[in-house]
Length: 471
Ligand code: FAD
Ligand code: NAD
Image (cartoon, rainbow, N blue to C red; front, top):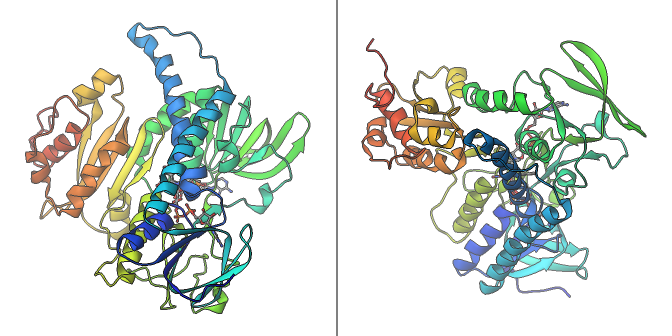
């Protein structure tokens, strides 16, 4: 059954970008529809990304905290793992949040369609799949179709023991030996989960370091800890071939020490994600796609087709849920005629490993690469009273500061809870704070947040708990 009355806005994709866009559009009084082929709202983030991975990381942290309690004279027995119950618990967390999003859609009177959407032209969407085929006319569409895991051809063999992130999150079992291909966000987060559950984890990374994009001094404490916990972390190494054998997956690894074949029970491939911009009928519109497959947009999230906007992973890096949400809200506002654009000075990034790594704004490496002169103000967590009480002094907090004005341009943190701390850095950057503002704001004692204040104090050479000799 085709509709003739066009929607003000149809959002394609119900991830954190798409549902946020639909909710904002509805709140602004626009007649809104939300289409997703998945029967559950929430997208990759809620169903097979952020939320299940963080729930599993919480379980991992319980295990490692119990192990490390020994140092405090508290002895727990070796944990007995009930993987079925763990899977159920993760599913309960996800299920509750999905229900919440569905309730919010209903309360706002957003029409939800479960179907695959393709563009028939710049004002009509064709729906197919689980709903009966139909066409929906629109005045504006917001494309929020997200991204999917990339599996290089050399690693594509038909064997259930080769997993992408979705497969690994399903926790099919706890393998004895796991090969993680890619030392990025997913490799390090899910490597952390499987390590805590008792798996022998080997990470192979094509580049000479983990988590390229984060400053190396922030990554170092994580690298040192995981080097002790994982079986191996191999840099400058490529998986040349995977072969399915009865006794395991034989991986041919080529690195600086030569080529060797190792046997693993499972392999997690986590080498990046690709945008879902194909098979959408976009060739029936003027929407432009870059050579990397991303939909091209301006700062108001407009594509080259005036009626079509695009947001989230499908428009490019950083592929993060909160960026998608923010862009979704911008698109809805622009469609409603409000002045809005996506010009964030600081999009925070958090790697939820143990310790966590978080950064926002300018990184030291990016400043170096562009030749921009910056000052660094670092506070080592060895000097933090709170870190000492937690037995986790390996962290670091640093500010990247404009040397002339003292303005905070970037913040980087490595340590437990870094992901919760970074928002102060985002606020400082967005508000145009100078280091003195941060230093002069009283932070509660003893907290890890004090490390941000003390890092700012090191910029003025006045940190209480860190002595920097006068030059
Ligand atoms: P998605 O969430 O990808 O949603 C797109 C939706 O579009 C999907 O539901 C899909 O079914 C639907 N769709 C696609 N094509 C069509 C079509 N033709 N018709 C109808 N529906 C369609 N980010 C963070 O910020 N923090 C984290 O901790 C984090 N952890 C992650 C962990 C993992 C394991 C993974 C894989 C990702 C993680 N991410 C994290 C990234 C985050 O999930 C993405 O950045 C985010 O989901 C992107 O949101 P989106 O709205 O652009 O699209
Ligand atoms: P990634 O880009 O973070 O890391 C991929 C890593 O694989 C890189 O270090 C890259 O050098 C390496 N690599 C590429 N090809 C390789 C090969 N053939 N052999 C060995 N190593 C290879 O990608 P990801 O870990 O797959 O995650 C995808 C995206 O999902 C992230 O970039 C991020 O945007 C998002 N994500 C975010 C979070 C979070 O916010 N906490 C968590 C998970 C995923």
